[in-house]
Amino acid sequence: MKIIFDKAANHLKQNLPFVIYKNPNEANVVGLFQKNDTLFLVNDFTEKGFVFASFDGNQTVLIPKNQSEIVKVAWDKNKLDIPEKVAALANELDKNNFKNLVAKGIQAIENHEFKKVVLSRKETVELVNFDLVSAFEKLTQLYPSAFVYCFFHPKVGIWLGATPEQLLRVKNNSFETIALAGTQKEEVSKEVIWKIKEKEEQQFVTDYIVAKLQKVASELSVSKPYSIKAGSIWHIKTDISGIFNSESSMQEIVHLLHPTPAVCGFPKEKSKFFILENENYKRTFYTGYLGELNSSFAEDNANTNLFVNLRCMEICDSHVHLYMGCGITKDSIPQKEWEESINKSATMRKIL
Image: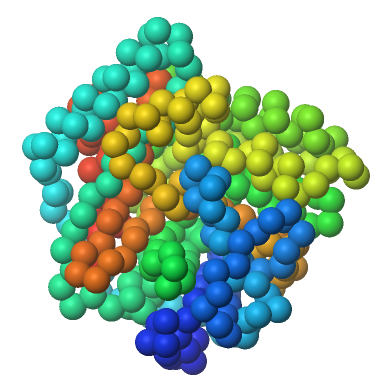
């Protein structure tokens, strides 16, 4: 993989946009290396390239296929030194602020403003001898079944992540998506048992996605929920697939799905308004989406392959911002949600 990493390092030195990524369970790492530093944006979703979109939908950045050199290399699964566990970063002020935010969300649910809201926080970690290439390699080793990426644009910044959540996969007029919710830390020799709160949270996501897709699709198929592990975290997952109606556009479909209840809440507009009003920081590209748009750079020949930007970090000069969120329902407990956010933070800090 040296050729693709050297190219990424060279682009970074020249301040030129690029993305390197590995699709879930695939054998290749793909790179798109833009030949200029122009900030291209998606206008109508007929564009071809790699898309990187914000949570609020106000910025949908594109690395265009026709403005980039494309490099594809075999993934080398090297054995890297990654700690099994890292110490929790417990800041009392952050803890109290997040618990108060969760309590406010629960109160809004009890007031019937919405049924679910996903609330998040940002954690800042100082960097010492950080190497971007090494971090990307560690992510691919830790999360072979996730979408792992490193994205850079001089007018956006450096983002790195390993997300387990598919937003949309399209080939011709066939599509696949998932409903993913619920979080449980892996325990040795312990059966995964889901409480009513997690099951209800996941059902909200499934029902929302199915209701939206029924407007634009036929032959809709929905699997039964099942448990799936991403790193050391378990989730509940439902597979959804079908055929799009001939009059449906990619733009319409993406806007129907994003943001899903898994990263926003239900109903969408009311929970999104609550998030923007109360989180007290800007998510920017956290819980946005990213991936291949109308192009097939990997070996599976999907036309569009988009993922939700979870388990991600924003790399700055001497520090990194980690992002983690929790699905809040009427049965949520602020202390438990704080602990869940700490577990998610520790999962990402293994690579720093």
